[in-house]
Image (cartoon, rainbow, N blue to C red):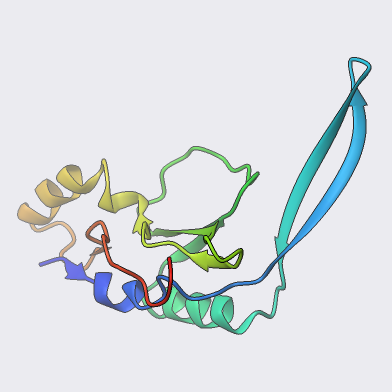
Length: 135
């Protein structure tokens, strides 16, 4: 049987994670352009707690925020967390936390589990939670 770990990671939805925005002005084809880059403090307590929980379940962690570029390979043991700007201007963890395996690959893993190959693959059901606070 697969472990449903949605309730564990769902408690992070709505929590604030301050991002630093850096603006760079440049010209592209002679026209002014502003590039925005975002970064989070590596020792942010919310992200540290999230990393520890992911480690506890044997999951790698990918954190997405605006402008993030990453490879498109699928890793069934990866937890995907999105940080978005809220209406109050604060950056928060959104409620669309998922694993690569919990979306398109869920049916494939369900058939593998049904055959008894690996009954301990942790998956997340898609979260549709109302996070605490004004999100």
